[in-house]
Image: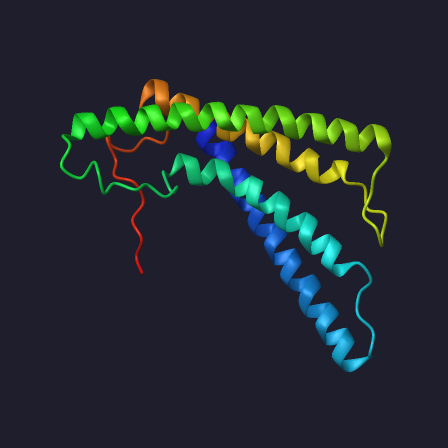
Length: 169
């Protein structure tokens, strides 16, 4: 199970690198437009592709750390055991949804590869984005299914029943 945690961490780091690249690209393009009167062609296409890949790459870490939004209004008075059972059931459902997304994203990537589709301005191949998204979605699927079947604390060495991540705001 520690391997899932390490892979999720690597995905999150890669997502962070992509966001830094988006920031650098955007700053460079805006500065170029302001100073030289010329922006980077296709900057919005690249930023959109990278942002989509980054979202998918952050998902395994978010699921591992139980960072998804949980509405506990109706379960606040339930016993810890009942809440754990419901959380595990929710993780199983999420795992099934993520499996569906992985399958459909894989088909979309294969279609992008076969048709040679690319972005409008740069012709950047769309399959590259799918190549980053599919493994991250598959990893999220594995993590969610493992959490549903094994429990939450056993995946990352935390306590048996860790609390979901809390909002600090």
